[in-house]
Image 1 (tube, rainbow, N blue to C red):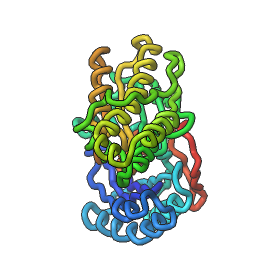
Image 2: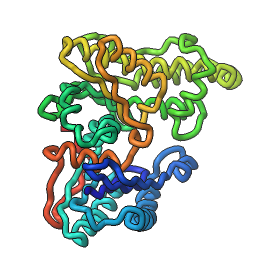
Image 3: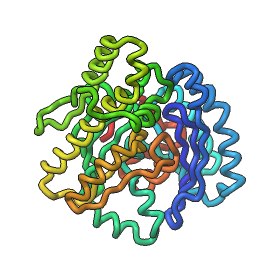
Image 4: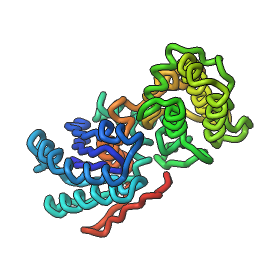
Length: 345
């Protein structure tokens, strides 16, 4: 069994994974209400909250599932906020020493790579390897506040990055757009809610890099375009047309994501046997629908991470430590280091 900890940003999370059964327990303390008052994540406050809540979460986990069968401790060691990662790393080292089990560092982005497969394992744990083999090679899209990445997962379970964003991530663009519109934090869900009442063709916003052979993303242009559009309207007009602004802005971001994913599928010339979606923005229903359509047209399965595994969570860290053992960093004792700027590799 694997005991996993996650503290890369503003969620304190613990999970226990049993390869024979799946995730037997997940415990999360969310800091959204705290950071909402500040309009975004405040690193010092996030670090303080991790210090306050890891103890109680671990106590709950031990009381509910026990640690006597734990054979490994896994922890997110990057990318993320340095101080936040350090808190999780210190807790994981202490647990590994106390339980006398190995310690593994898991790249947070590799957690997102594997998160769409957690539900597949839960259905039939004993047959996971055979079912996974039928889905590889796999094309995946990670869309979060800090990352927008297209990657492949080969039949040998090797991860290869196809493209990423040259500036803002998609989730960051949605949050910044929401701030420009005077909405709260986190902005993506608020924009999605208002977009349901608006017209996605009411305003013409750019779709990033237009070349079909170029897979990189860019979202700074659409954000700047929104700011210019707001400046053309009076405050009363902005409020009156808020649903249309949200719908059009969101559509521009989602179109860019769908177009680049479609281009990657076309460049793969039918080699991909499944399509995946993960990260916080994966909860956007319109994006899920668009990518489901791309998968349906190619008659391949579409795997989207479950809502509880789209954000910062320890469940995906535990699962990745097991399913992607070759991609985890093994450490002895206290030697595991945090890597705040770690890339997906």
